[in-house]
Image 1 (tube, rainbow, N blue to C red):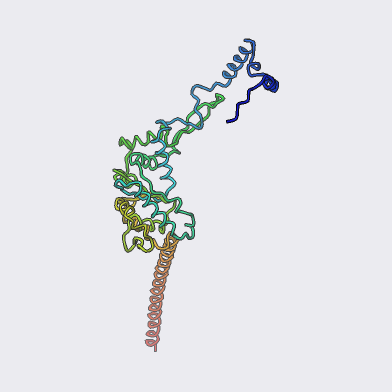
Image 2 (cartoon, helix red, strand yellow):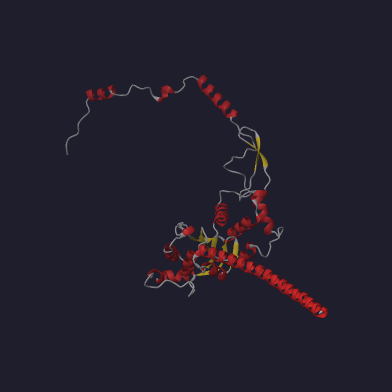
Length: 344
């Protein structure tokens, strides 16, 4: 081990010589109490000049009926946005699937939807936007009430102050507002009558127990058929994939998870559908383009049938009049010939 070097007096002097000559922070502080009190008075006057009204409401944080920072409030906003922006929602009852089973089911579902060729208006990548998620049934039930029975456009504006103290008209009609809370409370307490034909009246009995939802951002019969062939296959309309084509579908974890899923209903284009209705939508040939072609053909056939009926009635009337005219002419001609014979 090398011996230590002792610091000599010359080295210590050199260190003191190279110290920075800048003043320290203590020298930059105000040394007199007059400067300190003046700064404090200036800060107090500035704070008084920027004071906000007592009833000021920030635009980024409107008033809510319940605390908006809670997880339940955020879930409610998520569900209402989902219902308003997603035209196809399949509801499944699940029976305690494990995390591994959910992963396996979602993997096979994504693979099946990705294999569907996108054509025409359905060229959007639906596979990346399709979701299978577990719902909080109580909060989802409230979201259904909000979407169907709450109209934000009917909320009256109120007067609120701005940061400068000027009062302006502001409308608080978001999903967590007091107006939304009153609408939901009216439905819950029976103050608002629920029509039996409404979507909520048909889906509310399903909001019991563990429920999961499969959502698509567009109504695509081909993608719906691919999802049904995985989640609830029913040959021959929606057969399950073969073992050779998709061996992962027949794994024990995947089959265990699929057996715990049961299709109980759907919400498609703001309408409630049962299992037969879902299968009918998934069985539309050639997707929406095929359905539009069938509708055009039906309208053309109806128009041609109506035209033929009107033309047939006109032709029948014309033939009747012509036959009557010929009969009258024959009678007149026969009467004239009889007169000529009598004169002769």
